[in-house]
Image 1 (tube, rainbow, N blue to C red):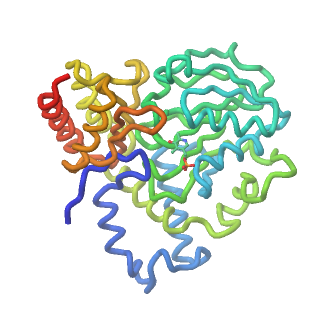
Image 2: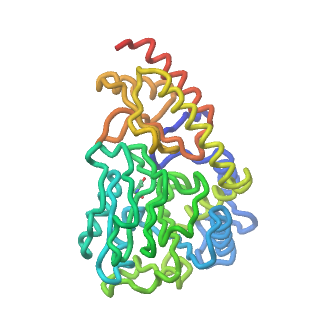
Image 3: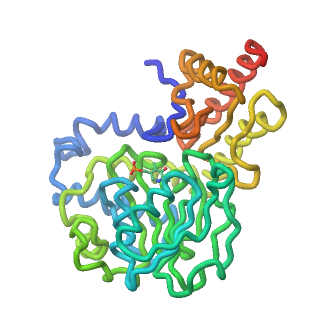
Length: 360
Ligand SMILES: *Cc1c(COP(=O)(O)O)cnc(C)c1O
């Protein structure tokens, strides 16, 4: 078996011990006589799996009791519509654009009401996060929407904006469970699972209970948070296997000591790459220093041909999926929780060798 270092932005690496555990239970889960993929979602054995996955996530993120955890489908992109459909009580929402996903969320929300663009970092190619205060938001907005970690550009909010009493809604797809976050500062948190939690197919929504029950009448049942909450995410068949995998990932982090420990590891890991980027001038870090993501590290050589050559040679050397997103170019190393620090150390060695072999 020859595992590579997979720097994909998502679907991405899963922890080796989680894959091993899943493999050992693949054909026969405990004494059920069947695979998790084959069992009824309404069976007692599966009920234990989904209940314990939820309990583990609650413990891991320290989710307050007045929040519901929903295991949904459709990816984070479905939430771009579900959020306005569920939360637009009066039809007004404020959005901040800091990258491509927040822009998509903004464009989708515009279909459903009066959506205001509060600020955008597009003027500097989304390399920073705007500084916002309470006064920047409409006091009568139903919610404020942000994307907390910008997967494509490699930036992250270095603060949680103060929206006063207006619920803050955040897309955490690419940074959820990478470090502790104060859930009580948010009305809704949502995340596709395939970056940091599980295989693709599961979307986690964490919602404050007082925000449930205001869906527009035309909201599809499948997108109605209240219906999903009332049915414990079992209104229909949930993404059973993904939820099982997410549970294993949550327990893996709990086993290492929780999100404080995960954060320490991620800080150490991304520092290997950022420190190198800062101490030389062959490669240029794309995101501005104050807003760097721990999860997605973007950089360029400044020469498109060299960027291409880099991605190609890196791939051949076992460093996969380093090509930047098609809309930005350059390189992007996604180093989610499951990427071991050795992967990043070896990547830096490769970068040094490449720079030596390809003088500008
Ligand atoms: C990947 C990603 C999305 C899109 O997720 P899907 O599950 O493919 O819909 C949305 N937002 C962020 C921040 C992402 O990283």
